[in-house]
Image (cartoon, rainbow, N blue to C red; front, side, top):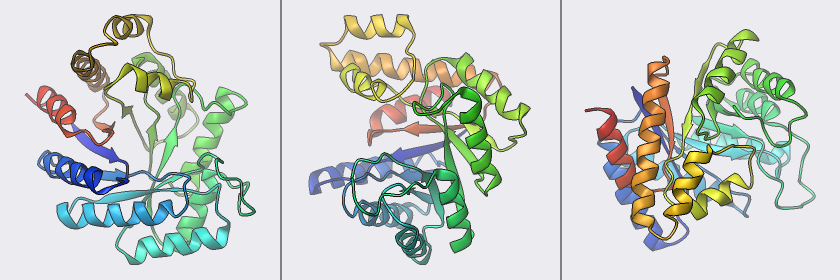
Length: 271
């Protein structure tokens, strides 16, 4: 069983110290990859780069930088990509991104176009996003699948899914990927639930369905955050064990920069 861990860049010195401690704890678990998200804020790629460089330097673990394309033109993207490559960050998670900043540079590029651009800059190792329960803007499940295949055909090495809680959703999606000729790993993205309030915020931006049983449990415990973390860890462990029994060997965890929960989950899964 192989793990990768995703972080977001810290916004102040206190959060930077917390992230540093998180990285040191998770590095002991020998992940095959760390990744660092980016946002739509100004100069976010610089913060992503500096964080990725620090992690890779301190841990010697390959660290991927997330890169979105919708708020940049091709010249800017090529410049950013070359800067990543020259600074030793040779793995990219290529995403379209949300068009939050309305600028003259906002483009009509898609993630598949970004994959092509990156491969033209250098031989990046590229991961892309996949959506077992369909991207909110997709015209249909089939068109969403075709878009994923295009990203793979253009040079992506693997896909990492959006988080989900229904094992069957992932398994059916994996079967559909295989049926249209997608042969790379479809790595499940696992989100340990740390807070029900936070989860509902995430759900409001996606098509993800949360099983009624899970929803009810968190409704009943919404005033006890410690209990919610324990329940969230248990759900994540159960999800991984079921996927592992179905032949899945690689898992990507959305850590939310939390080390203790991830360490607990890891040790329960590797007893």
